[in-house]
Length: 272
Ligand code: HH2
Image (cartoon, rainbow, N blue to C red; front, top):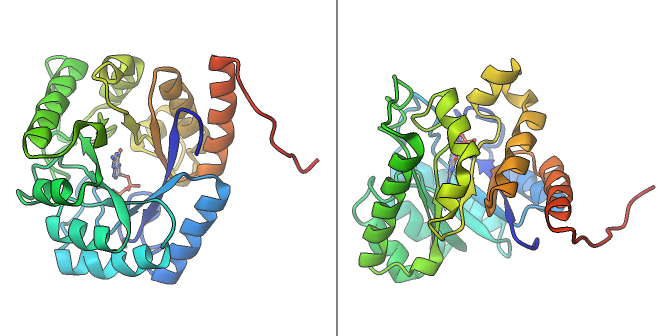
């Protein structure tokens, strides 16, 4: 555990995720990849069985469970998050060891999910998305992107707490890339402090996303430096959880960024 922030390593058990689709569809490969992320310094792992990339086709609960359950079971002992919007998937994932439900629909996708989270007392990540993955990148518009998303997250948090989810278990995520233009994403990162001011840990998932490709001209697997830049700036603005594919560079960058911001650091053994 790091002082002040957590790194969430992404494990996509899907054929069609935008940056690593098909790489870890096989459970053994997904587990090996997840173990590597833990070795590299991930504090927790986010296991997903359904892509949310723009235009992604929805997946049924049965197929999602077939993908994620063996991976969750194979990672017993690690801190596990389940990236799902379905109550049935969340319930079974929690029974298999997940302690965090990461719902990109912020409890709008499946009416029963809030009951599962409340009853099982897991952590909950509420993320903002405009529309759904099929439509979200078609001309997204806001009055004021930060104010609109803050209002949305506050309303979703009120909904969750009214249904019995303890506020101290809730994290908030502005949903970088989910119904946002490049300028929306940049403004959200620049004004992240306003979302941090809502008082709950803020999750940032900018890893390898297309706005970074548009700015740098880099292909999806060559956006590590671009991702690290967003993580460092988000840390400086108060983000608490970093959802990334590339854990090792993130770990180093955030360790140095935190040491710089706070003036506190502790030595680690180096190999040379
Ligand atoms: N982004 C993705 C998926 N889940 N969850 C949260 N809380 N925040 C995010 O920004 C976020 C998320 C998309 O990234 P990825 O999982 O790599 O791709 P895909 O959805 O295509 O599997």
